[in-house]
Length: 163
Image 1 (spheres, rainbow, N blue to C red):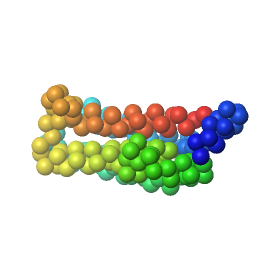
Image 2: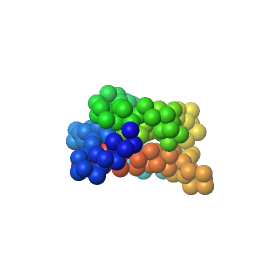
Image 3: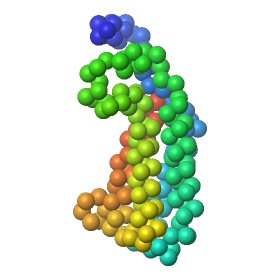
Image 4: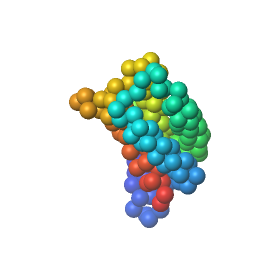
């Protein structure tokens, strides 16, 4: 199998291992990113249970939007050559429990984004959303840091699909 991959690489053939680029998906994720960063800026000083109602629709829109993006990216076709590569047992150490994370990692990272925003919403609703939990100024990283870590991985991968 490895000899075949090396031979194809040197023969000038290109093999597509990741899904095709989709401008609509990239635009949707980018738009959600701007809205999320705006939410972080609005809540950089924290939030109370009393002002939660003002932000509820934004949380709902973001969590729903990222969930829809997750469904879209999880259902896109993975090229046949990568499906064969994914059966290689040693990829589990690199890709985690799901080897598809190597060729289509966006759904996994969107799951993490959804988890971060859901937890932040729940903390806000309970009245415990302190500014340092949002911004990470507590020295251990905050919701914003966790979100940006995952979002940067998503944007880098999705941008790279545009070949």
